[in-house]
Length: 103
Image 1 (spheres, rainbow, N blue to C red):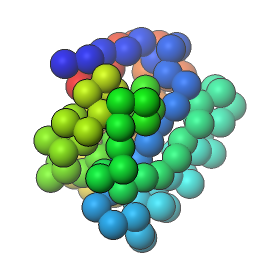
Image 2: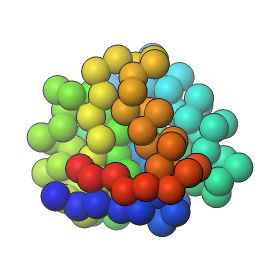
Image 3: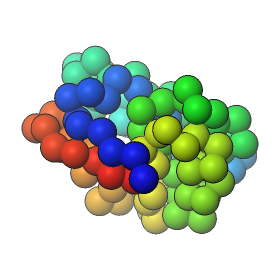
Image 4: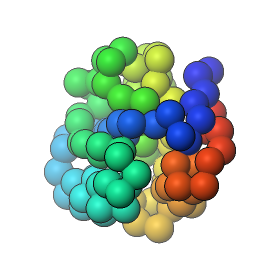
C-alpha cells in the first residue's frame, strides 16, 4: 500500500460513482481549504482514475477496491459520509501540519 508525506501532496482527487451531487460539493470545499497549501483538488468518476491521477484519492468506502486497482500508485483514503467525515480532517491535517498518509 502506498504512503505519502503531507508536505509532498500536490494533488487530491475526489472520486465517485457518477460525478454528481455531494462529491462535487466536497471537491469545492476541499479545494478552498487546500489551495493556500498549493494543493489542487479535482473530481473524477472512479472509472476514469489511472496511475497518474493524483497523489491522494478520496473515495466512498464502497469504491475503494476499484480506486486502488485503477490508481495503484496513489494513496487511496476511504470515507463514509460526504460531509464531516474524519478522513477529510486527516488529509487536511497531514497537509497543513505534516504527517504521513497510508492507503
